[in-house]
Image (cartoon, rainbow, N blue to C red; front, side, top):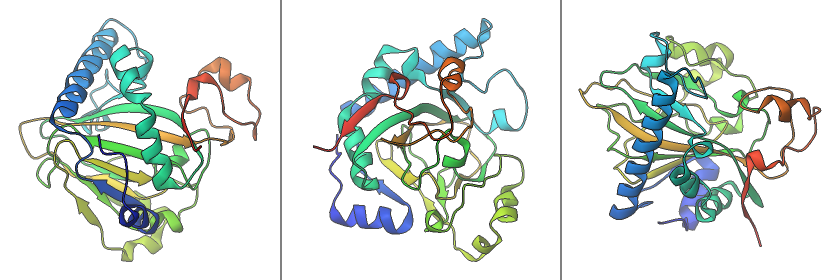
Length: 266
């Protein structure tokens, strides 16, 4: 696993708000991530079919459900996924790029764009969450080759520098984000094809989306969102359990075991 970014990669991440680590996983690690993700997703979808609605977007036949199959916090319910997500090496990679002293898991999520699946419209990540941070970071690991044909990621570079904590939903109108940030209409979008095993990391305030999957095969990715240690509650529920949410006041640090600290700078 390649978790030691170069100075050039750190500089690119800080400048553009995203970077690709081409050789993040070797062949054996990629196969392990694939089989673990497939098993964890199948387990979650089976539970959903039996009546559970635990952090999945399945069960509805609407536009959003055809953007991707989304299963959130698989590490809560799958031991193999927990081992992957708790790896401090991945936390160190995220922390080094974000230039923060500690990394907590916000949530993992599998994002599987179905065959001929809908595009993912432009959006920001961090405004959805229960904390606001200009240093939040996510990792997106390609489990299949992500191409222009099957819905690779696209970015609006440097938008993390001017973004506010305002957002739009992932809906049918790709242009909705520009109603909030009309100044971004002048930015040239950058596609980020990624070979299977590559990791793309982006700032939680970098505008991004993904194209349509124009193939008869799914495009799998495993992702994790990270919260800088010391982040505080902003009043939004997001994924926090009711008991934890009720225990927090706006401004309180979010530092429970639910958002485990996986890496801290020595």
